[in-house]
Length: 270
Image (cartoon, rainbow, N blue to C red):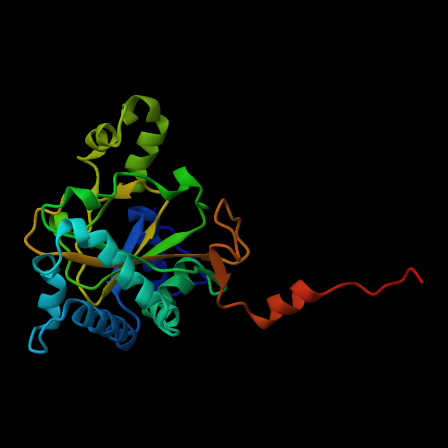
């Protein structure tokens, strides 16, 4: 697309065009201290729950979790960890800080944020933790949302996620009945040559358009994937099934908006 907005800086235009062209942006986190705080909280919880020795490296604790937790135990373990991390008062604030300036550029600076941040743990060779190809808008999400996806480990090849770029998605939309087949595997097989596998390292953040089909496959690498995801949208953009107050919470409402929302004309009927 390569559109240029004269009101934006060259760097802002570059980020906007990358998002529009690819459907996503991968960039260094805005606040590395906030990300380090998040990762250390996870490490503390994992060490405590799994009784891991103090001399174990943080990176090994995450990359080789599959050596300490069995596949049948994985989902209960994941739910326990995400419940504990979401109970920390500063967790959502730190998460927002990781991507703040990119959200300002791509979404806006008056934001609603998902109330609970999600956690994905994908073990090597584990077919029970797959996220079949889908677009979030197919199940009731607003097309005005973005997902901020934060890895706690380096993600590459099948340890990562994939996304279908906008041009290929338009082809899919135009031929959906023919290409979708009878299952998610049929749909994936019809577009697998077009998807982009996203290589992203710890210390980077991914912001992607959740209206584009995306997902993961069996992790064929030798390491566990730990990643977080959370949705953001403009406060005043349309909501779909996931409503403000139920799923989203305004986090950066500006004073002028607060005044405008409270404003009423003088009563001249008396």
